[in-house]
Image 1: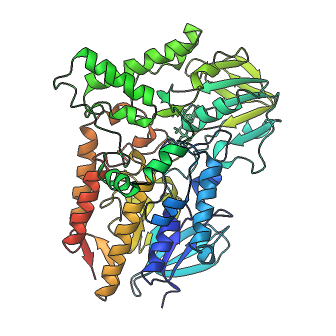
Image 2: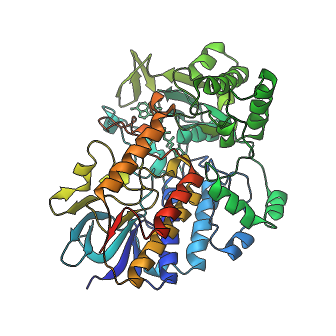
Image 3: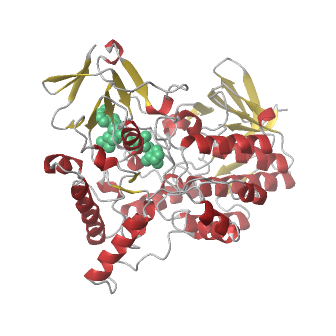
Length: 528
Ligand code: NA7
């Protein structure tokens, strides 16, 4: 007999809810977590300014009515410490810690056909067997650590945003370099600008950032709590897992210039990622996309005093929202400070890190601190970091040309292994917590179904998986996603196959597909 019914890997938003849900259903489940405490992403990413880019009222669990009534988010966009405190509170409230093994990384998973059971081996050599495994390993949890020549020779401090020193880093008055201008870089740069002695930002691709319009939300939250469940229901049926209000019709339908401009102005003024839903076809229609992109470009040039710096900060080579947009609070204005410089590494490539700083082009820039905000091996990275095998087949080999899943939930040939927000599910194109709840609830219901029917094994049909892979790729091909060198397409990792990692059909559509699969007795799955 296996040690446990279910092994859950990871104690972030996904793993915590999965443990709770399975316990409620009477399963014997255990979490193994690499970090020393709960939180996942929100434990590791504690860099200055770290903040969620989805509004806190939606980036939170909906499954516990009392929890959502009791918990008070202070700001429209919660900062990392507040989200971590929330997850700690949830772990305490639901008494989850007693079934979590911390400081333990799962290194391999081997499936045994004789018992229909997985055996996990951890970094400390211990093993745990379980009939089912839920990989709640996160979509942006395997850091991308580019090997800059000479990094080890640098005599100052090196900090990665995803592993910021728990006690903080002293940056006051220091000469600081930041490499990377995605969300982590943008937030770090904005937060540390007031304290550093000087800062040089090394940018490879300029980002489209829209204002956060962050604020206290005490009254809004109190009002929302009078109808929170309606808001949650709307979130689940929405495109992005968060209601963005009525979007404009497709671009070519009845839209005059005045209407287009006023819609963009209103959305930009409201702040946040709902900007990218200004037109229903913003990610499909090049002309619609170009109008929104031009709008944001013009706002950048208004905010940055030096036209040459503004131009460097202006994205021109890829469609807006085809790469993850950033949500900022005064990011562009940082470049108006006399002590802040911007280097485009396409013009001045980073040739090596020296003991004193960074050699970019022909110039050595001296620094006390180098901050790396270089992103993640998104969606597949954390799964492929584990040696997952069934007989002679490994998941890594199977996915060598890109991930192959059925519904982003399972992969054929790897029975009883579920992925929460796995590749080819909406995941990173959505409010993650909405998508996490959808998956956790679907997986839990599937396990309950198996149990009730005396079944011990579930696995997708190859044909169903092939169909889903084609559907995912076709849906992405209908969008402009492929025109940006983004982590959505695996383009940020050298050697990673280019493939659309998320399902672009939207959260509401996806939810309906999952519901349909379940009510038809798990269509496309083989149950044994
Ligand atoms: P991102 O968005 O992947 O950003 C990473 C940044 O680092 C991005 O600007 C990269 O440039 C840059 N980068 C990566 N490698 C290099 C090298 N070798 N040289 C120079 N610059 C480099 O990750 P984040 O952590 O900021 O955000 C991840 C998500 O977390 C975010 O979207 C939110 O959902 C939360 P590139 O653009 O690839 O040219």
